[in-house]
Amino acid sequence: MRRRWAIAGVVLGIVLIGYAVLATASPEELVSRRLDELERAISVEPDTNPLLHAARLEGELRDIFDEEVTLSIPELTSARSGLKPLVAIASKAALHYQTLELSFDSRKIEVDEESGTATARVRGRAVAEHAASRYADERRIDFDFVLRDGEWRIGSVDVAERESD
Image (cartoon, rainbow, N blue to C red; front, side, top):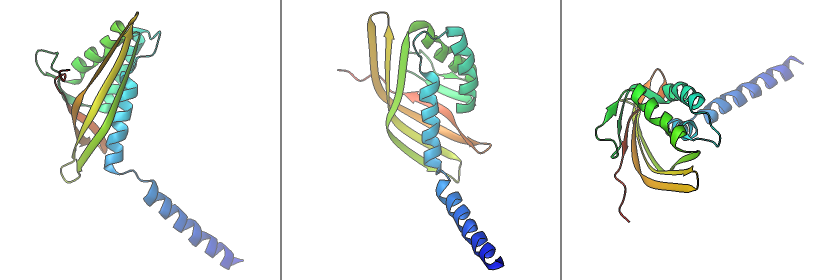
């Protein structure tokens, strides 16, 4: 009987070790998950209350971005830095659009574990609706990530100029 328990214990140990090794996400996967979180956070569903959206956004973006994040978007006249301006810009989406869907495709992620940094070059696509109008835009976006307290956070965002048709 003891032998069975010993064998069962060894098998269970091997299974747990195998699970731990296989279930651990790579840094690239963690960075990609952070981008998934950003897609969900920024999106606006129909009938979204702008005040509730802004409050929810602040909490979610605090988990996604570094406090000192820098933001460069061509439509803004100058680069912005800090979490508060970012939340203010993102919160306006619920005021201007009835719906907004954001997606990051063609992800190219490179991680430097030694320095605790990562870059992600993506194809960003935004589709928004307001009244009877539909707006779609697609551009390259470069994200720089920093590893803070064991979590990957976005340290900078650089949105490319709109490509001419």
